[in-house]
Image (cartoon, rainbow, N blue to C red; front, side, top):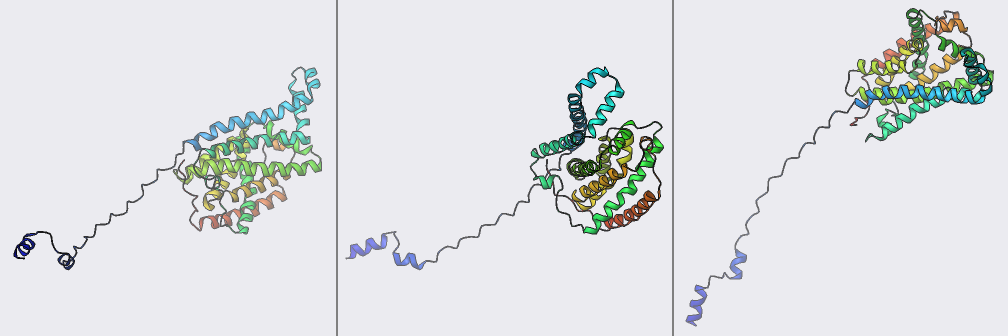
Length: 332
């Protein structure tokens, strides 16, 4: 018994009751790591938006020429072969073709679809959704503002006409040809022309110039530079110098609308209604006046310009009374 007690005293193994009696060591709280701030997003690239007009405008001009000339040559091949390259005969054949339903469609729709196709192809290369990349968000713009934007456009059109008439010393054959074409259209085809020449450019050109080009440049450039760049190339897309001068003030106006509202829907509406007004007005202007780009100060145009001036002032006050709405951030 004494040996057993002595062995128990020398055994270093602790008794279970002694282990339970000892207090458990407290776990020290581990320091929590601070959240890592997200890395700043790189500024969006603008080289694609700058390069796009240089590529698109020549392509659209080629598509427009081919889409108009090829069907006319095929349909009037015998008459063209007999003319032996007479330019007057060729011009008359093209004019006769354009005043047909097929020619009316071929003269404008393929070119506008070329703009749209290039926009959709370019957007596929961007990580953004189409609505975000092209500033197609629904704007918080009241309905009466759309009316003011559209009413202001004819006044800017008259300013453009004055600018073109002051800077040009020769006649604009392409403008005269366009007016002559519309004056030869029958009533039903003229109504179709108003629809075609209003809706297709209003959608396709705005998606390209204000949606794809300007909305991206606004993220890196000053608004004056971004709107000016898009407006200059919008004017150059009309090819003929007088026509380019005519539409430049309108391009600037639609650029300002898209910038301040953060969406191209108001500029699409403005572009469409302005074109509808212009095509309708063509039947009241003689071809000679159109070629010289002479601004027509009739009682009707004076009234329209006066109303447009008031609408321009009112809509400008509305646009600049609030900060511009920024389109969503873009990375490519």
